[in-house]
Image (cartoon, rainbow, N blue to C red):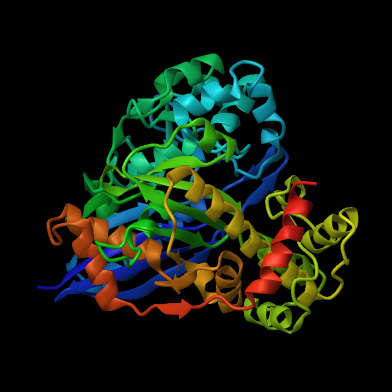
Length: 493
């Protein structure tokens, strides 16, 4: 029997509504609707345009229903992490949610340490320290006596907000909750000590549900508006990386692998059965985020193709429109391993003239300054691969495991040059695909929730049977090893 599901997959650059058809152990995907996800700057800061995103979501669902009538049995939402909306006591949205790159977060990590130590925060949350985290966004609101926080009755992470608008249910799904740095993965609930120390009201946080939870049917008024009958809304792994990792096509007996969910961010990690909250993981600034079936994704957030995206945006604003394929071709022709940057350096975190910032970094670190567009993009991609090696070494040290293969999934796998650099940099065999891992993991968790698939291993078997992968072998190891030594002096002068 064939079953159809809708994955609403929102990334930091674009959103999609994707139809998945599961039949005879194979999954087929159809993109129903795609739309841009552009932040909006207003006098008070940088925001997500969630009302437009909600409108696009409804358009996508409507298009799918018109085409496939009553065959759709499930809907699941996944998005990027850390951002949230605040609701009043009547369920109304208190303003457009802020974007994690908004400057209100600047300096908040250091300010927080004046009230509670770095060690205490990590002990209670196990999450990597980044100023974009929900914790520091909320703390900035406390510091500025934000009226919206004072008026808030409920905080919902972005996918939880859309689930509320779909069903009327106010809950927070486990995988997205863990990105906030407000959750204690060992106690299994919101971290009262951390919230209390920073003056953040703990009562606004919603009850937590696990991936694969059946939330309920569409609200009657919404179902009438979009022409739907009874469709179940399921919380998959609502964090897009959680869904992507659920779709990694690894075999059951293959445990020693690392993975990267590649896109605007490169989220690199490995699976763990329990949180790894130790002095060593704190030193490495690793993060323990929730996965499916109670698993933990031990990982590090790395600035990913954001560097290339911002370069492209800058050049487009100057009148030169280049596709990502064009930029990759130019990078492939540039001289190798000439200049390297730290992708996670603070100057690269905000929107702006990324090419100029990359040149300035190289100039400041006494390296050849990349001038052409190919040189700049190659510098960014090679530096990402160097960062992958650095994080791989951290993961192996903390877990005591020697990784044998690196799986890369997500939209970033389309950049074959970066895939090869990842193999060169880490020295591992790299297996890429599927590209639409996030939507696939979203859909397969819906199928498990509805009883159409019996386990995570069965769902990964579906992935292996349905989608092709590509393999990259390490090349030019001597040159890359030498360059990695230079990279380390650049990052840790």
